[in-house]
Image (tube, rainbow, N blue to C red):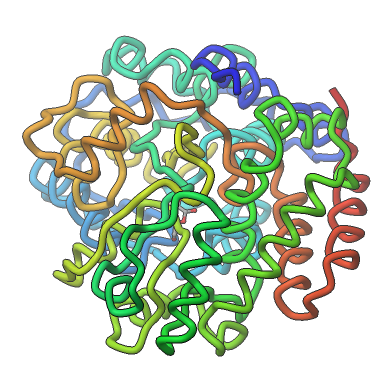
Length: 443
Ligand code: GAL
């Protein structure tokens, strides 16, 4: 498989097909990069005089909370008179998440928070920049020297028409298999599976030992959407995968069918109550004595497990994805008319700083977006992720807003949830095909 180098990855993620379509139906509140509201000026970096700083995110799980607090601590040390209002709400990884719904309402109502978590890529650009809701951050990139410390491809993914609109705090990897060595051992599985064939062989042994092989949390759409994107890339090559979003690969393709079949088979080995288990609860299940042996999830799981001081786990690429790195990135931006604009700008300075990234990422389970981290702060997993990010084929995540616009993410996650519920591959595939039609993918 040919490697998508950084430049190709950038081109794909930054110049996706959906911006124009969305622009056509969005009601702009201002042109992207429009001047800030009267009275607000670009912060000089001087300490803000007080007031509030309201930050939206969906970081409410272990690891996420502590990582965000690490940013707040740095901020508060510099701006002790600013009151931080942490408006974190659970459920954001999918389009329907509570945080995103409330954010949408506030943005549409002209009452934005001061800053908010947003995935780099189509989620940022299509949902917020194209409709004209965000400030151009060129001034901040210049003042903070960010153009020199973020990889250019990442800056381009954060940019629209050549201007950056958010500050990435991290790089997460989606395609990780987390496993519990003690459970594999108990079932006589010598090594973690590297392929789906090995996975199913191990799953049979685990079943015999009364251990669910795979953790699934599908009481609502999203978790399975995450697992499925990491199966799709095992059946489609890179061009085929990217083609799913520009109409050059049909969602009717038999490789999509095969991917659905693999996931459908995997449900046979999941925790039996997966339809009543929530994404928020799955980590407690994973660490429980009677929990599942493996979980395909992003590397925030590392942060969550660290926060539980849990150590009976290891990691490997999700089955059949060695050499691939499914990428997503969390970032923070500056909405037009942020009520405490100077405070928000100073928060973005912390997000982009070396100190901020080196405090946040080792706790979050992600690697820094900056290229100059203090490596002594990163553990074995994170150092390996940094290596893989440099050397692997990079692919943009569907479920986490990198590859494709939010309306499709919602339909996609619902289609996969339908598979989890009804176990009907043809019906789920028909829903995916319809979702792609509705999204009007074209090159
Ligand atoms: C992702 C997000 C991660 C993590 C994860 C689970 O969408 O990028 O930072 O929060 O959801 O909640």
